[in-house]
Image 1 (tube, rainbow, N blue to C red):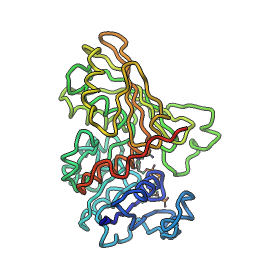
Image 2: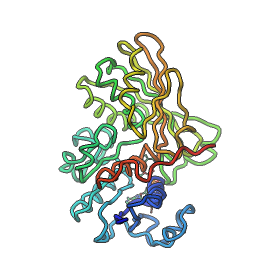
Image 3: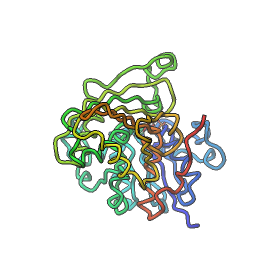
Image 4: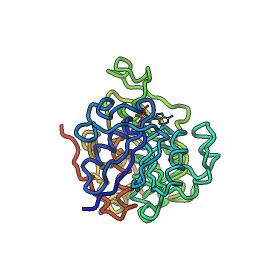
Length: 344
Ligand SMILES: NC(=O)c1ccc[n+]([C@@H]2O[C@H](COP(=O)([O-])OP(=O)(O)OC[C@H]3O[C@@H](n4cnc5c(N)ncnc54)[C@H](OP(=O)(O)O)[C@@H]3O)[C@@H](O)[C@H]2O)c1
């Protein structure tokens, strides 16, 4: 089978390492270039204990190194702010790009500035970036050359919200999203708040009064309906490596029909599973897989709670990035992503 050489910039981070793992098991994509920042110049195996074989023996290139000519696709798994220039450079070199950072997830410079507090060096690329929530943007992803891979919290929230926003049955003015993430969601960089003793045996909320993903959720949820969307979003960090559980407190009309709406929307989706009515998902059911599990509990005619679970590093980042990349290259969307959750 013909191979497609790919580059991973930010390969030494958690999402970068997950991309390596997925691509090593992908029948078509092949790792041809690994970029790093503080670890550049070292061998991949020195920096990432999980790497073996030919990947371990690859030297990590500097973040601004020239990309090999035969590389057709670049994954940018870099911090926001750092990603934009690498994306521009890769596009100018004729590569397709899937950007895992937030740098191209917004449609206006004002929203990006409000959410991230910095100026964007290439707002001229906003209009061509495709927001890659794959289940709702397949055609645009397939023809795109720059995919903005959604954030992990927005992925777990928007998958169940989008079909309900579309029906007009959901009250979009008062959506409460209470979410919990494993510590890998914060990345691998040194941070006192992520030390074992700070995290272990503890759960803490963060990101208030307004976490940057709230802008992303409101912007894209609006696109599914047209009515203004207001979310109150409170993220928490849990003492586990990976996994994300998002609880959505919702109100609206005819909540008894919502389970059917979700079932119908996702009936043929390979990576979204709507559980039987009243059954709620757990992170253990999805960790290690590219799946999103959704459960709903109807509390009354006008109130319901939806719980959505993903692996933040898979459907929340690198798995969805591969799903999008498959579409960009005309491959089966599920290629290289068929693994079940890790159990136990
Ligand atoms: N973690 C998640 O669950 C998750 C989910 C969805 C989206 N994302 C997004 O994906 C991106 C990567 O996240 P991550 O968790 O993998 O981060 P991470 O573990 O902190 O890794 C960051 C990577 O970027 C490199 N890097 C750091 N500063 C850089 C700079 N100034 N210029 C160039 N490269 C730099 C690092 O290289 P060195 O190691 O060599 O310093 C490392 O390879 C972020 O934008 C994040 O918001 C993360």
